[in-house]
Length: 143
Image (cartoon, rainbow, N blue to C red; front, side, top):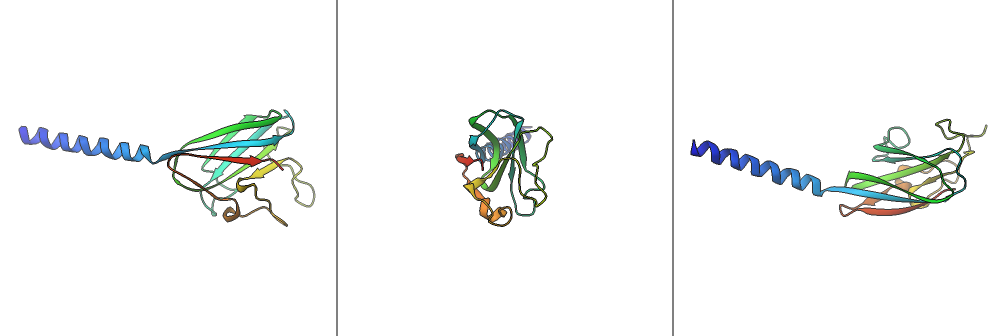
């Protein structure tokens, strides 16, 4: 019986140590959004973890009521790594970024690194930034 208790104790210690290590690798990303022009509609914010998922399948997303000026959103418990953040102001509340006949956005938007595409939307590589295990804060300006 003594050997059984010792084995259980070792397993429990290993599990607790593993869980503690995994929790310590979780990072928070704080996104300060600047230059919000009106209180119409919502801000739609998404974070992407790869070029394959960029603008298709967000890792996490948030919807916030728009307010003029600046606002903040926080993504919690991310593994440290590289991510790209995208935000758009869904001013008319239809759940999508409205575009004109040429595909140019009619609503305000922004990408991490405050990158903008010259002839098309920026790539994941242009927008990606590092999130540190200790947490990261970025400023994203609406265009």
